[in-house]
Image 1 (tube, rainbow, N blue to C red):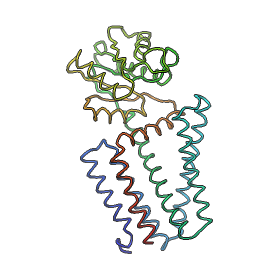
Image 2 (tube, one colour):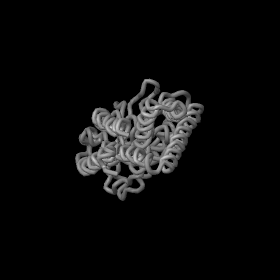
Image 3 (spheres, one colour):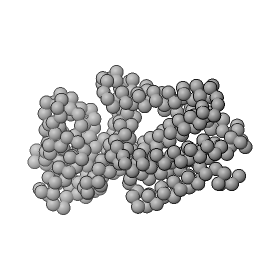
Image 4 (spheres, rainbow, N blue to C red):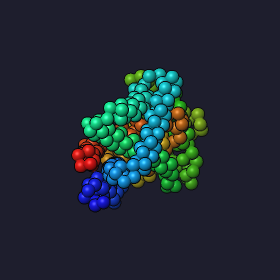
Length: 333
């Protein structure tokens, strides 16, 4: 079997080399993961095409394994969505989690229909649909690894300011997500050698559905936990993560030049926060607070979509290159 007989392998090699180069030049960009996932998907298409002729049993086993993994992920997303919607109501992000699970299950259903139908057109459509679904599923699984690893970073000992990013309020008090961030901030403070000199900067404006600013609610919470009022600084204008970072750093630059800031957010949000910080030229270290296991999957899926949107032009452009190995798998075999 020559490599040129299965050009999917050539595409996989090109994507892999691009991933290595990108990892060296821009190791924190998600484009690196995209390139490697393209390489794996392309190699999978080549292996499926070559093994179909020489080892059909291997193809069958791999196909069944892939289908079972897709079924498990689809059911997990759907069940997680149902549980969270019953607990918190029909929020857009929670419904989107269920929609993603339904989409995966729909792909499996389509596979059954196409397999039953048979024919060249049905076979070509099956290759294309499964390649796209497999690629996106693999990309999401890689992203969860990014989130898991980044969410467990540790704060530097030279921290002078702890910036807590706002989240939703429960009435006039921090909600569960925000309380976990505040408790993580207190733990960071306890681990700094000169804890009495550390300043808490609470960052969050007032949302349309909130009765007060998140910064005010966080400041009150920290005071009830024993933090002196003169160690708390409020930033109450920001309404998104980018503004959280820019406004907070501008405030620290004005009142404490030479600061070393540690930003505290939820674990699933650390990776995107670090990406945004680098994009706006903010020098901070980001650490994560724990999240409820039931909410983690839905929140990670939302972050996945947000990171794809953050760099949508290069990421979508790269992902469209999947059409090359898919086309060769369909038309050359």
